[in-house]
Length: 381
Image (tube, rainbow, N blue to C red; front, side, top):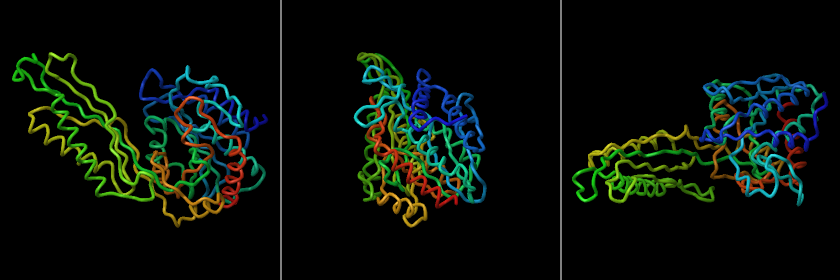
């Protein structure tokens, strides 16, 4: 069976909905995307494995390997997209459309567009014996739980020496990004008639104290940790949403705050959670109230690849760009945990991701294919 051309591949990938979300209303399987990739890669003589994600029978990873050996190169991407605002799109988000020298479609840049680019690069070596393996890796649920990459890291598979994650970076290599953790603070007070505060214990007032503690904690972190390589050089803590109470004439009996914290390399998410818990327990004791922290998802560690690593030097030479640092999180720390030198680099811009009329610029497609070809040439031949 002949493999579709690059544009046709992306058309089919965009047409296969694969939203991942914390909301059950939005969350979908990624199996149709995995099946398409498996078919094309088998036709290129890759050995293809489809791996169910533990604990979720509708999510799958794909590991496709060409060649063998102890080293090799992984070209990695995620198969899922974020939810979409259908009414705000100028075209059907599930039909690839071309205008203004761009391809528009949900996931076109973040990051279904990377797979046809990687496959096109691999096609150049279809009849060339590789000295080290080329692995194309497709993961599940990067946009929500990162359960796909997390499962691979826990399984210790696949193994290679180098990894390129094709998130949209304008083909600029990224060797460092902040971590991310999303947490909820829940306070159980005691409701009562607002005319007599002694009848209850106001959860909203205790949350006010919690917010003060978190803002003070943020300030201390920003004084302690700085990295001038980042556009925002300090860790950030964002108070994202709050819900509590039900009526102005009732003492608030329950309140929940959700926040995210983006740590710099060198900071540990578990240690940060422990420090936050200590502050929350002080509020609980002093206010005689129940305060609990809940992790909304497993989080992503901060990521850093050494500036003098072989992969970083190669990416800089091939692209003509020095490596950069970004604030958004990726699957890089999970692949790095597998023992691989890892960078993030792909066509498109993160500025176009997660919004209506997402697109990938056509003028970045061929340069991306060329760079990946040279990467395969260096690390697999």
